[in-house]
Length: 300
Image (tube, rainbow, N blue to C red; front, top):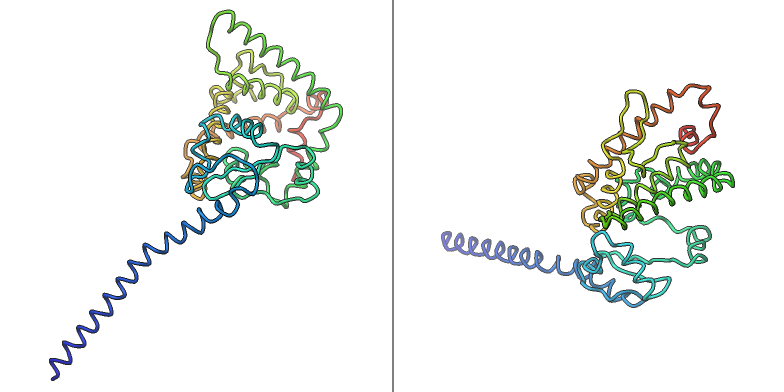
């Protein structure tokens, strides 16, 4: 009888473990399916037609398959022309609403004061670090006031002059390329144009990036990284790619090693530039106009 009782207990225990294993196996199948349905499918079914926008290509990836690498800005313009000044699209499980009407933008940014998207700021943080778009809510007013001290009528007049000068240089370069039937990397040339305007108008530098300078020398012994425009252009491309892969953002720098490495090279140049400004003789500083770099360096 004791032997029979032991066999029955063993069979009973084995049956319990088998049932637990079956439930666990069922849970491993059912729980991921439910999570997928709740996180990826349900929002698209519920909000897929709430605002005009491109058809959802995939319940998993949203509209990511429709976004062309390096041409995200062109896709946004194309969707705006097709669906209106306010439209939506999906990146994985997240819905993005694009607002391009000036009055609506003013309402969102000043009247309603919506919080920044964590996905958006995490995607831009590797490149912009603590710029106005990614800085914390507590530090944003300080930076905004600092920039506002320089963004006045004099800066706008100076900026207009620098844009006109650099634009003439860009057009001349494109004309030369057209006459010689040469291929031009237009994205890189636009990056050079932008860097020249920024360095001249915002930081008081007289460098000529469009004219062939690889980057400004910022000290007697401090050399800029090789081809600063190419580094910035590469960082912009990698940043756009990083934005299209939100599932990698939680990995931090391990999810975008090349982007972080490229930004580190740009950061090194910026550190040299700051050090050169700190060593600037007082008479030289007094002879020039206060620029944004001076203002940023004065912010605690």
